[in-house]
Amino acid sequence: MGEFKVHRVRFFNYVPSGIRCVAYNNQSNRLAVSRTDGTVEIYNLSANYFQEKFFPGHESRATEALCWAAGQRLFSAGLNGEIIEYDLQALNVKYAMDAFGGPIWSMTASPSGSQLLVGCEDGSVKLFQITPDKIQFERNFDRQKSRILSLSWHPSGTHIAAGSIDYISVFDVKSGSTIHKMIVDRQYMGVSKRKCIVWGVAFLSDGTVISVDSAGKVQFWDSATGTLVKSHLIANADVQSIAVADQEDSFVVGTAEGTIFHFQLLPVTSNSNEKQWVRTKPFQHHTHDVRTVAHSPTALISGGTDTHLVIRPLMEKVEVKNYDAALRKITFPHRRLISCSKKRQLLLFQFTHHLELWRLGSTVATGKNGDTLPLSKNADHLLHLKTKGPENIICSSISPCGNWIAYSTASRFFLCRLNYEHDNISLKRVSKMPAFLRSALQILFSEDSTKLFVASNQGSLHIVQLLEGSFKHLHAFQPLSGTVEAMCLLAVSPDGSWLAASGTSAGVRVYNVKQLKLHCTVPAYNFPVTALAIAPDTNNLVIAHSDQQVFEYSIPDKQYTEWSRTVQKQGFHHLWLQRDTPITHISFHPKRPMHILLHDAYMFCIIDKSLVSSSLLPPESSLESL
Image (cartoon, rainbow, N blue to C red):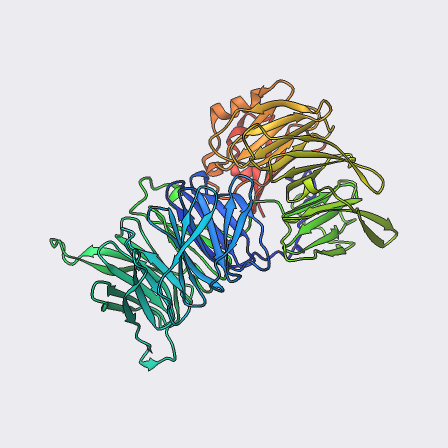
Protein backbone atom coordinates (compact mmCIF):
# COMPACT_ATOMS: atom_id res chain seq x y z
CA MET A 1 0.00 0.00 0.00
CA GLY A 2 3.04 2.30 0.21
CA GLU A 3 3.43 2.87 -3.52
CA PHE A 4 1.35 6.08 -3.38
CA LYS A 5 0.29 8.71 -0.88
CA VAL A 6 -3.13 8.58 0.75
CA HIS A 7 -4.57 11.94 1.77
CA ARG A 8 -7.00 11.43 4.65
CA VAL A 9 -9.66 14.12 4.33
CA ARG A 10 -11.01 15.01 7.78
CA PHE A 11 -12.78 18.29 7.01
CA PHE A 12 -15.98 16.94 5.41
CA ASN A 13 -18.28 17.70 8.34
CA TYR A 14 -21.27 15.77 7.08
CA VAL A 15 -23.96 14.97 9.66
CA PRO A 16 -26.89 12.75 8.60
CA SER A 17 -30.42 13.77 9.56
CA GLY A 18 -32.29 11.94 12.29
CA ILE A 19 -34.71 9.15 11.42
CA ARG A 20 -38.40 9.90 11.93
CA CYS A 21 -40.28 6.93 10.44
CA VAL A 22 -39.66 3.45 9.07
CA ALA A 23 -42.11 1.24 7.18
CA TYR A 24 -41.44 -2.39 6.30
CA ASN A 25 -42.95 -4.04 3.21
CA ASN A 26 -43.25 -7.77 3.74
CA GLN A 27 -44.09 -8.51 0.09
CA SER A 28 -40.92 -6.99 -1.38
CA ASN A 29 -38.73 -7.21 1.75
CA ARG A 30 -37.97 -3.51 1.47
CA LEU A 31 -37.72 -0.87 4.15
CA ALA A 32 -38.73 2.77 3.67
CA VAL A 33 -37.04 5.30 5.95
CA SER A 34 -37.90 8.99 6.30
CA ARG A 35 -35.56 11.49 7.91
CA THR A 36 -36.15 14.80 9.65
CA ASP A 37 -35.05 16.79 6.58
CA GLY A 38 -37.83 15.17 4.51
CA THR A 39 -35.58 12.68 2.70
CA VAL A 40 -37.08 9.25 2.08
CA GLU A 41 -34.79 6.25 1.53
CA ILE A 42 -35.63 2.71 0.43
CA TYR A 43 -33.46 -0.22 1.50
CA ASN A 44 -33.56 -3.59 -0.22
CA LEU A 45 -33.18 -6.04 2.68
CA SER A 46 -32.79 -8.94 0.24
CA ALA A 47 -29.85 -7.21 -1.44
CA ASN A 48 -27.53 -6.92 1.55
CA TYR A 49 -29.55 -3.99 2.99
CA PHE A 50 -28.52 -1.71 0.12
CA GLN A 51 -30.04 1.78 -0.08
CA GLU A 52 -31.24 1.35 -3.65
CA LYS A 53 -33.47 4.44 -3.91
CA PHE A 54 -33.91 7.82 -2.28
CA PHE A 55 -36.19 10.83 -2.61
CA PRO A 56 -34.66 14.23 -1.76
CA GLY A 57 -36.07 16.19 1.13
CA HIS A 58 -37.94 19.47 1.27
CA GLU A 59 -38.03 22.01 4.11
CA SER A 60 -41.84 22.06 4.21
CA ARG A 61 -42.20 18.25 4.27
CA ALA A 62 -41.68 17.31 7.91
CA THR A 63 -42.68 13.67 7.56
CA GLU A 64 -44.54 12.22 10.54
CA ALA A 65 -45.93 9.04 8.98
CA LEU A 66 -44.86 6.57 6.33
CA CYS A 67 -46.62 3.46 5.04
CA TRP A 68 -46.87 0.99 2.17
CA ALA A 69 -50.24 0.31 0.57
CA ALA A 70 -51.71 -1.54 -2.40
CA GLY A 71 -48.63 -3.74 -2.63
CA GLN A 72 -45.71 -1.60 -3.79
CA ARG A 73 -47.08 1.94 -3.37
CA LEU A 74 -45.42 4.23 -0.84
CA PHE A 75 -47.14 7.12 0.96
CA SER A 76 -46.01 9.70 3.48
CA ALA A 77 -47.75 12.44 5.44
CA GLY A 78 -46.56 15.24 7.67
CA LEU A 79 -47.03 18.54 9.41
CA ASN A 80 -47.76 20.45 6.21
CA GLY A 81 -51.07 18.57 6.04
CA GLU A 82 -50.33 16.81 2.76
CA ILE A 83 -50.41 13.15 1.76
CA ILE A 84 -47.65 12.32 -0.71
CA GLU A 85 -47.28 9.32 -3.00
CA TYR A 86 -43.86 8.51 -4.45
CA ASP A 87 -43.07 7.27 -7.93
CA LEU A 88 -40.71 4.36 -7.29
CA GLN A 89 -39.58 4.18 -10.93
CA ALA A 90 -38.92 7.85 -11.70
CA LEU A 91 -37.80 8.51 -8.10
CA ASN A 92 -39.83 11.66 -7.61
CA VAL A 93 -43.02 12.79 -5.91
CA LYS A 94 -45.98 11.48 -7.89
CA TYR A 95 -48.46 13.93 -6.34
CA ALA A 96 -49.31 15.68 -3.08
CA MET A 97 -52.85 16.05 -1.73
CA ASP A 98 -54.07 18.25 1.12
CA ALA A 99 -56.10 16.28 3.69
CA PHE A 100 -57.71 19.52 5.02
CA GLY A 101 -57.29 18.55 8.65
CA GLY A 102 -54.21 20.54 9.54
CA PRO A 103 -50.91 18.82 10.32
CA ILE A 104 -51.03 15.04 9.93
CA TRP A 105 -49.53 13.07 12.83
CA SER A 106 -50.33 9.48 11.87
CA MET A 107 -51.21 7.33 8.88
CA THR A 108 -51.87 3.65 8.25
CA ALA A 109 -53.07 1.46 5.38
CA SER A 110 -55.91 -1.02 5.69
CA PRO A 111 -55.05 -4.75 5.90
CA SER A 112 -56.23 -5.16 2.31
CA GLY A 113 -54.10 -2.20 1.19
CA SER A 114 -57.01 -0.53 -0.57
CA GLN A 115 -57.66 2.26 1.96
CA LEU A 116 -55.60 4.87 3.71
CA LEU A 117 -56.33 6.39 7.10
CA VAL A 118 -54.81 9.61 8.46
CA GLY A 119 -55.01 11.27 11.88
CA CYS A 120 -54.94 15.06 11.96
CA GLU A 121 -54.22 17.96 14.27
CA ASP A 122 -57.90 18.99 14.43
CA GLY A 123 -58.90 15.60 15.90
CA SER A 124 -60.29 14.23 12.67
CA VAL A 125 -59.68 10.73 11.33
CA LYS A 126 -60.00 10.71 7.54
CA LEU A 127 -60.48 7.70 5.28
CA PHE A 128 -59.19 7.68 1.70
CA GLN A 129 -59.80 5.15 -1.05
CA ILE A 130 -56.69 4.16 -3.01
CA THR A 131 -57.42 4.25 -6.76
CA PRO A 132 -55.02 3.03 -9.49
CA ASP A 133 -53.69 6.54 -10.14
CA LYS A 134 -54.35 8.52 -6.97
CA ILE A 135 -56.22 8.54 -3.66
CA GLN A 136 -59.76 9.78 -3.16
CA PHE A 137 -61.33 11.13 0.02
CA GLU A 138 -64.13 8.90 1.30
CA ARG A 139 -65.30 10.21 4.68
CA ASN A 140 -64.50 11.50 8.17
CA PHE A 141 -64.87 9.49 11.36
CA ASP A 142 -66.23 11.01 14.57
CA ARG A 143 -64.02 13.97 15.44
CA GLN A 144 -62.06 13.77 18.70
CA LYS A 145 -61.12 16.56 21.10
CA SER A 146 -57.35 16.37 20.50
CA ARG A 147 -54.90 15.50 17.76
CA ILE A 148 -54.69 11.90 16.54
CA LEU A 149 -51.12 10.80 17.20
CA SER A 150 -51.33 7.10 16.35
CA LEU A 151 -53.55 4.74 14.36
CA SER A 152 -53.92 0.99 13.88
CA TRP A 153 -56.34 -1.21 11.94
CA HIS A 154 -57.80 -4.42 13.28
CA PRO A 155 -56.50 -7.22 10.97
CA SER A 156 -60.10 -7.86 9.83
CA GLY A 157 -60.41 -4.23 8.71
CA THR A 158 -63.65 -3.70 10.68
CA HIS A 159 -62.33 -1.53 13.55
CA ILE A 160 -59.67 1.09 14.17
CA ALA A 161 -57.78 2.18 17.28
CA ALA A 162 -56.62 5.79 17.54
CA GLY A 163 -54.28 7.23 20.16
CA SER A 164 -54.69 10.83 21.31
CA ILE A 165 -53.78 12.84 24.39
CA ASP A 166 -55.11 11.10 27.54
CA TYR A 167 -57.29 8.54 25.74
CA ILE A 168 -57.60 5.85 23.08
CA SER A 169 -60.60 5.70 20.75
CA VAL A 170 -61.99 2.62 19.01
CA PHE A 171 -63.94 3.27 15.80
CA ASP A 172 -66.28 1.15 13.72
CA VAL A 173 -65.03 1.47 10.14
CA LYS A 174 -68.42 0.91 8.50
CA SER A 175 -70.23 3.67 10.42
CA GLY A 176 -67.26 5.83 11.36
CA SER A 177 -68.61 6.18 14.89
CA THR A 178 -66.76 5.85 18.18
CA ILE A 179 -67.43 2.59 20.04
CA HIS A 180 -65.18 3.04 23.08
CA LYS A 181 -63.02 5.76 24.57
CA MET A 182 -60.40 4.36 26.95
CA ILE A 183 -58.87 6.87 29.37
CA VAL A 184 -55.12 6.48 29.93
CA ASP A 185 -53.72 6.78 33.45
CA ARG A 186 -51.71 9.96 33.89
CA GLN A 187 -49.74 8.54 36.80
CA TYR A 188 -46.02 8.53 36.15
CA MET A 189 -43.74 7.12 38.86
CA GLY A 190 -46.42 7.87 41.45
CA VAL A 191 -46.91 11.47 40.29
CA SER A 192 -49.90 12.66 38.27
CA LYS A 193 -48.82 14.42 35.08
CA ARG A 194 -50.81 17.12 33.30
CA LYS A 195 -51.34 14.91 30.25
CA CYS A 196 -50.43 11.53 28.86
CA ILE A 197 -49.60 11.26 25.15
CA VAL A 198 -50.43 7.96 23.44
CA TRP A 199 -47.53 7.75 20.99
CA GLY A 200 -48.42 4.39 19.46
CA VAL A 201 -51.20 1.79 19.28
CA ALA A 202 -51.39 -1.73 17.82
CA PHE A 203 -54.66 -3.61 17.21
CA LEU A 204 -54.39 -7.41 17.47
CA SER A 205 -56.66 -10.08 15.99
CA ASP A 206 -58.12 -11.08 19.37
CA GLY A 207 -59.34 -7.54 19.98
CA THR A 208 -56.45 -6.50 22.22
CA VAL A 209 -55.16 -2.95 21.79
CA ILE A 210 -51.56 -2.35 22.85
CA SER A 211 -50.62 1.25 23.61
CA VAL A 212 -47.36 3.04 24.42
CA ASP A 213 -47.34 6.46 26.03
CA SER A 214 -45.40 9.36 27.49
CA ALA A 215 -45.71 7.91 31.01
CA GLY A 216 -43.27 5.15 30.11
CA LYS A 217 -45.94 2.44 30.01
CA VAL A 218 -46.92 -0.39 27.66
CA GLN A 219 -50.60 -1.18 28.25
CA PHE A 220 -52.99 -3.88 27.05
CA TRP A 221 -56.68 -3.03 26.53
CA ASP A 222 -59.77 -5.09 25.79
CA SER A 223 -61.40 -3.26 22.88
CA ALA A 224 -64.73 -5.12 23.37
CA THR A 225 -65.25 -3.76 26.89
CA GLY A 226 -62.95 -0.74 26.76
CA THR A 227 -61.07 -1.83 29.90
CA LEU A 228 -57.41 -2.02 30.87
CA VAL A 229 -56.13 -5.60 31.10
CA LYS A 230 -52.46 -5.20 31.98
CA SER A 231 -49.84 -2.47 32.31
CA HIS A 232 -46.03 -2.57 32.13
CA LEU A 233 -43.94 0.37 33.37
CA ILE A 234 -40.75 -0.08 31.32
CA ALA A 235 -39.04 3.32 31.17
CA ASN A 236 -38.45 6.56 33.01
CA ALA A 237 -39.22 8.44 29.80
CA ASP A 238 -41.62 8.31 26.86
CA VAL A 239 -42.25 5.04 25.04
CA GLN A 240 -42.47 6.49 21.53
CA SER A 241 -43.00 3.66 19.06
CA ILE A 242 -44.39 0.15 18.65
CA ALA A 243 -44.43 -2.50 15.91
CA VAL A 244 -46.00 -5.97 15.95
CA ALA A 245 -44.91 -9.06 14.01
CA ASP A 246 -47.31 -10.37 11.36
CA GLN A 247 -47.81 -13.56 13.38
CA GLU A 248 -48.68 -11.44 16.44
CA ASP A 249 -46.36 -13.52 18.62
CA SER A 250 -43.95 -10.67 19.39
CA PHE A 251 -43.68 -6.89 19.28
CA VAL A 252 -41.01 -4.27 19.80
CA VAL A 253 -41.16 -0.82 21.42
CA GLY A 254 -38.68 2.07 21.45
CA THR A 255 -38.13 4.61 24.22
CA ALA A 256 -36.79 8.15 24.57
CA GLU A 257 -33.88 6.69 26.56
CA GLY A 258 -32.56 4.94 23.45
CA THR A 259 -33.63 1.50 24.69
CA ILE A 260 -35.58 -1.07 22.69
CA PHE A 261 -37.71 -3.67 24.45
CA HIS A 262 -38.83 -6.93 22.89
CA PHE A 263 -42.07 -8.59 24.07
CA GLN A 264 -43.00 -12.18 23.21
CA LEU A 265 -46.18 -14.21 23.63
CA LEU A 266 -45.05 -17.23 25.68
CA PRO A 267 -46.78 -20.13 27.50
CA VAL A 268 -47.48 -19.47 31.19
CA THR A 269 -45.94 -22.84 32.06
CA SER A 270 -44.05 -25.39 29.99
CA ASN A 271 -47.11 -27.61 29.53
CA SER A 272 -49.75 -24.89 29.41
CA ASN A 273 -51.74 -23.76 26.37
CA GLU A 274 -52.38 -20.43 28.03
CA LYS A 275 -50.00 -17.69 26.90
CA GLN A 276 -49.07 -14.26 28.18
CA TRP A 277 -46.99 -11.31 27.01
CA VAL A 278 -43.53 -11.30 28.55
CA ARG A 279 -40.80 -8.68 28.20
CA THR A 280 -37.85 -10.81 27.10
CA LYS A 281 -35.00 -8.68 25.77
CA PRO A 282 -33.88 -5.07 26.22
CA PHE A 283 -31.41 -3.62 23.67
CA GLN A 284 -29.40 -0.41 23.91
CA HIS A 285 -28.23 0.34 20.38
CA HIS A 286 -29.19 4.03 20.32
CA THR A 287 -27.93 7.04 22.25
CA HIS A 288 -31.08 9.14 21.93
CA ASP A 289 -34.82 8.83 21.26
CA VAL A 290 -35.97 5.76 19.31
CA ARG A 291 -38.64 7.53 17.28
CA THR A 292 -39.70 4.56 15.15
CA VAL A 293 -39.50 0.76 15.03
CA ALA A 294 -40.45 -2.01 12.60
CA HIS A 295 -40.73 -5.78 12.94
CA SER A 296 -39.74 -7.95 9.99
CA PRO A 297 -40.10 -11.76 10.08
CA THR A 298 -36.46 -12.14 11.11
CA ALA A 299 -35.33 -8.82 12.63
CA LEU A 300 -36.12 -5.84 14.82
CA ILE A 301 -35.56 -2.52 13.05
CA SER A 302 -35.22 0.84 14.78
CA GLY A 303 -34.24 4.42 14.07
CA GLY A 304 -34.21 7.74 15.84
CA THR A 305 -32.56 11.01 16.71
CA ASP A 306 -29.01 9.61 16.66
CA THR A 307 -29.40 9.04 12.85
CA HIS A 308 -28.56 5.30 13.04
CA LEU A 309 -30.73 2.71 11.32
CA VAL A 310 -30.27 -0.43 13.41
CA ILE A 311 -31.26 -3.90 12.17
CA ARG A 312 -30.98 -6.60 14.82
CA PRO A 313 -31.72 -10.13 13.60
CA LEU A 314 -33.80 -12.39 15.83
CA MET A 315 -31.51 -15.35 16.32
CA GLU A 316 -34.37 -17.80 16.81
CA LYS A 317 -35.76 -16.75 13.40
CA VAL A 318 -32.49 -16.97 11.48
CA GLU A 319 -31.97 -20.41 9.95
CA VAL A 320 -28.25 -20.16 9.23
CA LYS A 321 -26.04 -18.64 11.93
CA ASN A 322 -23.66 -16.80 9.60
CA TYR A 323 -22.72 -13.17 9.05
CA ASP A 324 -26.28 -12.37 7.97
CA ALA A 325 -27.28 -12.88 11.60
CA ALA A 326 -25.03 -10.03 12.78
CA LEU A 327 -26.24 -6.66 13.97
CA ARG A 328 -26.18 -3.96 11.28
CA LYS A 329 -25.99 -0.25 11.90
CA ILE A 330 -26.42 2.00 8.85
CA THR A 331 -25.56 5.67 9.28
CA PHE A 332 -24.29 7.18 6.04
CA PRO A 333 -26.06 7.21 2.66
CA HIS A 334 -25.05 4.62 0.07
CA ARG A 335 -24.36 7.26 -2.56
CA ARG A 336 -21.52 9.61 -3.40
CA LEU A 337 -21.55 13.07 -1.82
CA ILE A 338 -18.01 14.05 -2.89
CA SER A 339 -16.59 14.80 -6.34
CA CYS A 340 -13.01 15.61 -7.27
CA SER A 341 -11.09 17.87 -9.64
CA LYS A 342 -7.84 16.02 -10.28
CA LYS A 343 -6.17 18.86 -12.15
CA ARG A 344 -6.64 21.49 -9.44
CA GLN A 345 -6.68 19.14 -6.42
CA LEU A 346 -10.18 20.27 -5.45
CA LEU A 347 -12.94 18.48 -3.57
CA LEU A 348 -16.64 19.40 -3.81
CA PHE A 349 -18.70 18.36 -0.76
CA GLN A 350 -22.47 18.04 -1.02
CA PHE A 351 -24.67 18.92 1.97
CA THR A 352 -28.44 19.21 2.26
CA HIS A 353 -28.70 22.88 1.25
CA HIS A 354 -25.20 23.94 0.29
CA LEU A 355 -21.96 22.91 -1.43
CA GLU A 356 -18.42 23.42 -0.16
CA LEU A 357 -15.33 23.62 -2.36
CA TRP A 358 -11.96 22.82 -0.78
CA ARG A 359 -8.41 22.66 -2.06
CA LEU A 360 -6.38 19.78 -0.67
CA GLY A 361 -3.37 20.46 1.49
CA SER A 362 0.11 19.41 0.40
CA THR A 363 3.38 18.22 1.86
CA VAL A 364 7.03 18.34 0.86
CA ALA A 365 8.11 15.80 3.47
CA THR A 366 9.23 12.29 2.63
CA GLY A 367 9.20 9.07 4.58
CA LYS A 368 8.99 5.33 4.46
CA ASN A 369 5.92 3.17 3.95
CA GLY A 370 3.28 3.69 6.62
CA ASP A 371 4.58 7.07 7.81
CA THR A 372 2.20 9.98 8.41
CA LEU A 373 3.61 13.01 6.64
CA PRO A 374 3.04 16.52 8.09
CA LEU A 375 1.28 19.07 5.90
CA SER A 376 3.37 21.97 4.68
CA LYS A 377 0.21 23.68 3.42
CA ASN A 378 -3.20 23.21 5.00
CA ALA A 379 -6.44 22.63 3.10
CA ASP A 380 -8.21 25.79 1.90
CA HIS A 381 -11.97 26.38 2.05
CA LEU A 382 -12.52 28.17 -1.26
CA LEU A 383 -16.28 28.38 -1.72
CA HIS A 384 -19.55 28.03 0.18
CA LEU A 385 -22.43 27.81 -2.30
CA LYS A 386 -25.87 27.90 -0.68
CA THR A 387 -29.01 26.99 -2.61
CA LYS A 388 -32.14 29.11 -2.61
CA GLY A 389 -35.53 27.63 -1.86
CA PRO A 390 -36.73 24.77 0.32
CA GLU A 391 -35.55 21.84 -1.81
CA ASN A 392 -32.60 19.63 -0.90
CA ILE A 393 -29.73 19.08 -3.31
CA ILE A 394 -30.07 15.76 -5.14
CA CYS A 395 -26.65 15.48 -6.81
CA SER A 396 -23.60 17.57 -7.66
CA SER A 397 -20.28 17.35 -9.51
CA ILE A 398 -17.17 19.37 -10.26
CA SER A 399 -15.37 19.02 -13.60
CA PRO A 400 -11.89 17.41 -13.67
CA CYS A 401 -10.42 20.75 -14.79
CA GLY A 402 -12.08 22.51 -11.85
CA ASN A 403 -13.77 25.19 -13.98
CA TRP A 404 -17.35 23.91 -13.76
CA ILE A 405 -19.78 23.00 -10.98
CA ALA A 406 -23.17 21.45 -11.68
CA TYR A 407 -25.88 20.52 -9.19
CA SER A 408 -29.58 19.80 -9.16
CA THR A 409 -32.63 19.99 -6.90
CA ALA A 410 -36.05 18.45 -7.52
CA SER A 411 -37.13 21.31 -9.79
CA ARG A 412 -34.01 23.20 -10.91
CA PHE A 413 -30.66 22.47 -12.53
CA PHE A 414 -27.66 24.74 -11.97
CA LEU A 415 -24.45 25.07 -13.98
CA CYS A 416 -21.75 27.44 -12.77
CA ARG A 417 -18.44 28.60 -14.26
CA LEU A 418 -15.49 29.11 -11.91
CA ASN A 419 -12.71 31.62 -12.55
CA TYR A 420 -9.42 31.60 -10.63
CA GLU A 421 -7.25 34.68 -10.25
CA HIS A 422 -4.32 34.08 -7.91
CA ASP A 423 -5.95 33.36 -4.51
CA ASN A 424 -9.35 34.72 -5.54
CA ILE A 425 -12.16 32.66 -6.97
CA SER A 426 -15.32 33.94 -8.68
CA LEU A 427 -18.43 32.10 -9.78
CA LYS A 428 -20.83 32.88 -12.61
CA ARG A 429 -24.05 30.95 -13.09
CA VAL A 430 -25.09 29.90 -16.59
CA SER A 431 -28.62 31.17 -17.19
CA LYS A 432 -31.59 29.68 -19.02
CA MET A 433 -30.92 26.01 -18.40
CA PRO A 434 -33.40 23.81 -20.32
CA ALA A 435 -36.37 22.41 -18.45
CA PHE A 436 -35.61 18.79 -19.37
CA LEU A 437 -32.49 18.88 -17.18
CA ARG A 438 -34.55 19.49 -14.05
CA SER A 439 -34.53 16.92 -11.30
CA ALA A 440 -31.30 15.30 -12.40
CA LEU A 441 -30.45 12.18 -10.42
CA GLN A 442 -26.82 11.94 -11.53
CA ILE A 443 -24.34 14.40 -13.06
CA LEU A 444 -20.97 13.50 -14.58
CA PHE A 445 -18.33 15.45 -16.51
CA SER A 446 -16.16 13.94 -19.22
CA GLU A 447 -12.46 13.49 -18.49
CA ASP A 448 -11.53 16.46 -20.72
CA SER A 449 -14.30 18.61 -19.13
CA THR A 450 -15.87 19.40 -22.51
CA LYS A 451 -19.07 17.41 -22.00
CA LEU A 452 -21.62 17.03 -19.25
CA PHE A 453 -23.75 13.90 -18.85
CA VAL A 454 -27.05 14.28 -17.01
CA ALA A 455 -29.42 11.46 -15.98
CA SER A 456 -32.97 12.74 -15.51
CA ASN A 457 -35.65 11.14 -13.36
CA GLN A 458 -37.62 10.23 -16.48
CA GLY A 459 -35.02 7.69 -17.60
CA SER A 460 -33.37 9.84 -20.29
CA LEU A 461 -29.65 10.59 -20.53
CA HIS A 462 -28.59 14.00 -21.86
CA ILE A 463 -25.25 15.03 -23.36
CA VAL A 464 -24.38 18.72 -23.01
CA GLN A 465 -21.43 20.39 -24.77
CA LEU A 466 -19.70 22.94 -22.52
CA LEU A 467 -18.56 26.15 -24.17
CA GLU A 468 -16.63 29.08 -22.71
CA GLY A 469 -19.53 30.55 -20.79
CA SER A 470 -22.52 28.65 -22.09
CA PHE A 471 -23.60 25.23 -23.31
CA LYS A 472 -25.14 23.31 -26.20
CA HIS A 473 -27.44 20.31 -25.90
CA LEU A 474 -26.04 17.59 -28.17
CA HIS A 475 -28.23 14.52 -27.68
CA ALA A 476 -30.65 12.66 -25.43
CA PHE A 477 -30.70 8.88 -25.03
CA GLN A 478 -34.33 8.01 -24.38
CA PRO A 479 -35.38 5.12 -22.12
CA LEU A 480 -36.55 1.86 -23.56
CA SER A 481 -40.16 1.96 -24.72
CA GLY A 482 -42.66 1.51 -21.93
CA THR A 483 -40.17 2.28 -19.13
CA VAL A 484 -39.27 5.38 -17.14
CA GLU A 485 -36.64 3.76 -14.96
CA ALA A 486 -34.35 6.40 -13.52
CA MET A 487 -30.60 6.09 -14.05
CA CYS A 488 -28.85 6.38 -10.68
CA LEU A 489 -25.22 5.67 -11.63
CA LEU A 490 -23.11 6.94 -14.54
CA ALA A 491 -19.58 6.19 -15.74
CA VAL A 492 -17.76 7.62 -18.75
CA SER A 493 -14.60 6.25 -20.32
CA PRO A 494 -11.47 8.45 -20.06
CA ASP A 495 -11.37 8.84 -23.84
CA GLY A 496 -15.01 10.01 -23.84
CA SER A 497 -16.19 7.28 -26.22
CA TRP A 498 -18.40 5.23 -23.89
CA LEU A 499 -21.07 6.02 -21.32
CA ALA A 500 -22.36 3.37 -18.90
CA ALA A 501 -25.61 3.87 -16.97
CA SER A 502 -27.29 1.78 -14.31
CA GLY A 503 -30.87 2.11 -13.11
CA THR A 504 -32.70 1.11 -9.96
CA SER A 505 -32.83 -2.50 -11.15
CA ALA A 506 -29.78 -4.66 -11.78
CA GLY A 507 -29.19 -3.76 -15.46
CA VAL A 508 -26.35 -1.71 -16.97
CA ARG A 509 -26.55 -0.14 -20.43
CA VAL A 510 -23.53 1.08 -22.41
CA TYR A 511 -23.86 3.87 -24.99
CA ASN A 512 -21.53 4.88 -27.81
CA VAL A 513 -21.07 8.62 -27.24
CA LYS A 514 -19.50 9.32 -30.65
CA GLN A 515 -22.12 7.45 -32.66
CA LEU A 516 -24.91 8.45 -30.21
CA LYS A 517 -26.50 5.01 -29.97
CA LEU A 518 -26.94 2.12 -27.54
CA HIS A 519 -23.92 -0.16 -27.82
CA CYS A 520 -24.81 -3.08 -25.55
CA THR A 521 -26.54 -4.16 -22.34
CA VAL A 522 -24.60 -6.00 -19.65
CA PRO A 523 -26.35 -9.25 -18.65
CA ALA A 524 -28.66 -8.69 -15.70
CA TYR A 525 -27.58 -9.76 -12.22
CA ASN A 526 -29.72 -10.53 -9.18
CA PHE A 527 -28.35 -7.74 -6.99
CA PRO A 528 -28.38 -3.98 -7.68
CA VAL A 529 -25.32 -2.07 -8.86
CA THR A 530 -23.60 0.05 -6.22
CA ALA A 531 -20.68 1.45 -8.26
CA LEU A 532 -19.23 1.30 -11.77
CA ALA A 533 -16.27 2.72 -13.69
CA ILE A 534 -14.59 2.31 -17.08
CA ALA A 535 -10.85 1.54 -17.15
CA PRO A 536 -8.49 3.58 -19.34
CA ASP A 537 -6.80 1.93 -22.32
CA THR A 538 -8.85 -1.29 -22.18
CA ASN A 539 -12.34 0.29 -21.85
CA ASN A 540 -13.28 -2.52 -19.50
CA LEU A 541 -16.34 -1.75 -17.38
CA VAL A 542 -15.92 -2.72 -13.70
CA ILE A 543 -19.20 -3.22 -11.84
CA ALA A 544 -19.72 -3.71 -8.08
CA HIS A 545 -22.98 -5.15 -6.75
CA SER A 546 -24.58 -5.01 -3.31
CA ASP A 547 -23.64 -8.65 -2.56
CA GLN A 548 -19.96 -7.56 -2.84
CA GLN A 549 -19.42 -9.30 -6.18
CA VAL A 550 -17.19 -7.44 -8.67
CA PHE A 551 -17.40 -8.03 -12.43
CA GLU A 552 -15.25 -6.81 -15.33
CA TYR A 553 -16.98 -6.46 -18.70
CA SER A 554 -15.21 -5.70 -21.97
CA ILE A 555 -17.18 -2.99 -23.75
CA PRO A 556 -15.50 -3.46 -27.17
CA ASP A 557 -15.95 -7.27 -27.03
CA LYS A 558 -19.41 -7.15 -25.40
CA GLN A 559 -18.54 -9.92 -22.95
CA TYR A 560 -17.03 -10.55 -19.52
CA THR A 561 -13.23 -10.55 -19.45
CA GLU A 562 -11.18 -13.65 -18.81
CA TRP A 563 -10.07 -12.27 -15.45
CA SER A 564 -13.68 -11.74 -14.40
CA ARG A 565 -14.62 -15.29 -15.39
CA THR A 566 -11.66 -16.67 -13.44
CA VAL A 567 -12.56 -14.67 -10.34
CA GLN A 568 -16.17 -15.83 -10.43
CA LYS A 569 -15.04 -19.42 -10.85
CA GLN A 570 -12.63 -19.28 -7.89
CA GLY A 571 -14.86 -17.13 -5.68
CA PHE A 572 -14.06 -14.20 -3.40
CA HIS A 573 -12.60 -14.48 0.08
CA HIS A 574 -15.29 -15.09 2.70
CA LEU A 575 -14.21 -12.02 4.67
CA TRP A 576 -14.75 -9.89 1.59
CA LEU A 577 -18.25 -11.26 1.00
CA GLN A 578 -19.19 -10.77 4.66
CA ARG A 579 -18.69 -6.99 4.56
CA ASP A 580 -21.98 -5.19 5.17
CA THR A 581 -21.29 -1.83 3.50
CA PRO A 582 -21.51 -1.46 -0.29
CA ILE A 583 -18.71 -0.35 -2.62
CA THR A 584 -19.54 3.26 -3.50
CA HIS A 585 -16.67 4.21 -5.81
CA ILE A 586 -14.30 2.49 -8.25
CA SER A 587 -11.14 3.96 -9.76
CA PHE A 588 -7.90 2.84 -11.39
CA HIS A 589 -4.20 3.31 -10.70
CA PRO A 590 -2.90 5.76 -13.36
CA LYS A 591 0.45 3.96 -13.71
CA ARG A 592 -0.57 0.37 -12.96
CA PRO A 593 -3.34 -0.78 -15.31
CA MET A 594 -3.74 -4.07 -13.43
CA HIS A 595 -4.79 -2.30 -10.21
CA ILE A 596 -8.46 -1.58 -9.42
CA LEU A 597 -9.13 0.78 -6.52
CA LEU A 598 -12.37 0.44 -4.55
CA HIS A 599 -13.77 1.87 -1.34
CA ASP A 600 -16.84 1.86 0.87
CA ALA A 601 -17.63 3.92 3.97
CA TYR A 602 -14.97 2.18 6.10
CA MET A 603 -12.48 0.44 3.80
CA PHE A 604 -10.04 1.24 0.98
CA CYS A 605 -8.98 -1.67 -1.21
CA ILE A 606 -6.70 -2.50 -4.15
CA ILE A 607 -7.39 -5.47 -6.41
CA ASP A 608 -4.26 -6.55 -8.24
CA LYS A 609 -5.41 -8.48 -11.30
CA SER A 610 -1.90 -9.75 -11.98
CA LEU A 611 -1.96 -11.94 -8.87
CA VAL A 612 -3.61 -15.33 -9.12
CA SER A 613 -4.80 -14.97 -5.52
CA SER A 614 -6.33 -11.55 -6.13
CA SER A 615 -9.70 -13.21 -6.58
CA LEU A 616 -9.51 -14.24 -2.94
CA LEU A 617 -8.58 -10.73 -1.71
CA PRO A 618 -6.49 -11.68 1.36
CA PRO A 619 -7.47 -9.06 3.93
CA GLU A 620 -4.00 -8.90 5.42
CA SER A 621 -2.46 -7.43 2.28
CA SER A 622 -5.31 -5.93 0.25
CA LEU A 623 -7.62 -4.13 2.66
CA GLU A 624 -7.04 -1.03 4.72
CA SER A 625 -9.55 0.32 7.20
CA LEU A 626 -10.48 3.97 7.01
